[in-house]
Length: 301
Image 1 (cartoon, one colour):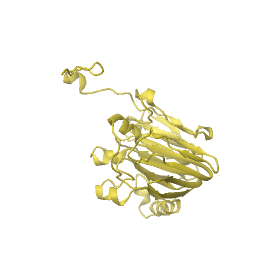
Image 2: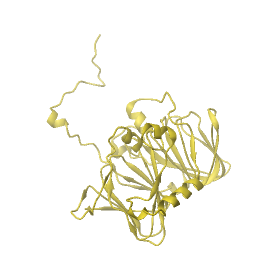
Image 3: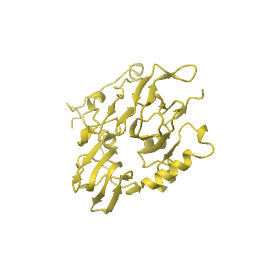
Image 4: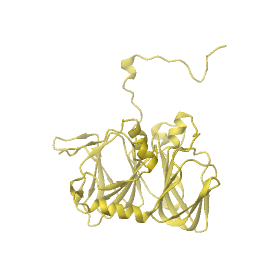
């Protein structure tokens, strides 16, 4: 029996030539709601991938539907976890393996992959969707077990807890004023994230506020829930001696837009406006936290 395969040949490398691989960098982009159409944030060309992806591990996009409409997720997008943030609308998500999940504006829903998962609208609905489809595609795997059952995080509950955190006595001393969404299963795992792969943070930035830079090894797909004028994120690979970001790239926030934050880059959220701004970063940090490789670092100056 011959092991020779024309599609995959044996290769060997000198360690010094292969120890520091230079993969394509995560592009810094801003994405809109596609003018009320449904579509994905596809960076597959920039990342040199043969499948749709926003980052190496995650795929995101917008699902926009009219009233009394329905949308069935393509069974191609197999994932171990996915997230639906209801930007606006009312309806329910259904599948023959679980009871209907009713949603309304501001709710957030998570679940595993299900064939014939369908969104049914009562009112016109606009939804931000994120899944770990690219991660499973890269590994050539399909999930055989549901890790986290379908969950819903209600707008009122999230806003109430976010208000408590942001108005607490020590709120002004924190690098971020936000709430991390989790569940009892990931609490037992020790990650305290919204799924075993995904992380979701509802983060509020007050007017005339500059959050000190921090960085981490996971890619962030940031969705801007709301921002007025003069709100932006400053990003860069290095810090100056005074703790500010060196050679910064600035991404201005726009309501109902999403943008990428590359792994390992220092980033700082800035609000020079007169209104509170809210951002929802979705990351693959559940996986990184479990692997002990997230490595969150904060500027101490």
